[in-house]
Length: 209
Image 1 (cartoon, rainbow, N blue to C red):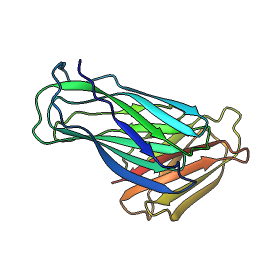
Image 2 (image 1 turned 90 degrees about the vertical axis):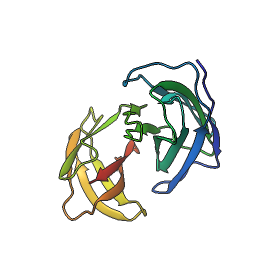
Image 3 (image 1 turned 180 degrees about the vertical axis):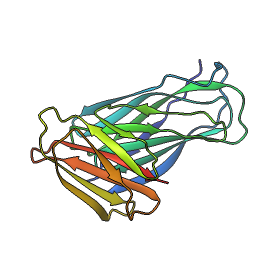
Image 4 (image 1 turned 60 degrees about the horizontal axis):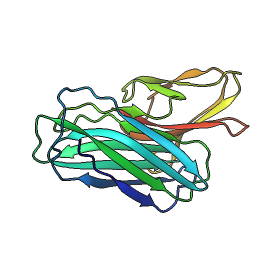
């Protein structure tokens, strides 16, 4: 099976509450060896070596057309979205990705390949680190965040809009799950950080519809 390599170097992992976003075209060449079906197993692995974070693995894409990978970096979370455009076919292939981010200092990162219902209608979803769950997401009333908190330590939740402004804070969370209500929040994309006094932290992305 023909596989294409995507190689990106982003100069620097960004500090807390910063955001970087972009879109990279990783293929515009038809894939010869393909497979049928509409549900595929995909995987992304992470390796931190000194200050360089490497993401590698396989994602699926249409055999034809142009294929883009949108990336968003917020705190210690990296969000990836696969987008297929152009003249597409009724077949799909695996494509290799290889991404390197320099200047990283955190020892914990969450990488999520977000679902996308594009022109080809194929659902793509990969989560590389299962330490935190958000369901439903997107949501229009409330969502539940569940995370690893075996000793029921005290955590603080902070939520930011797409411009980095703080919009919600929940102090003293002792359980391993809690709900977020939209209240007076507008539709859009939000980011959050969940942390305690020992600097154990999680972060993620919320979408209000």
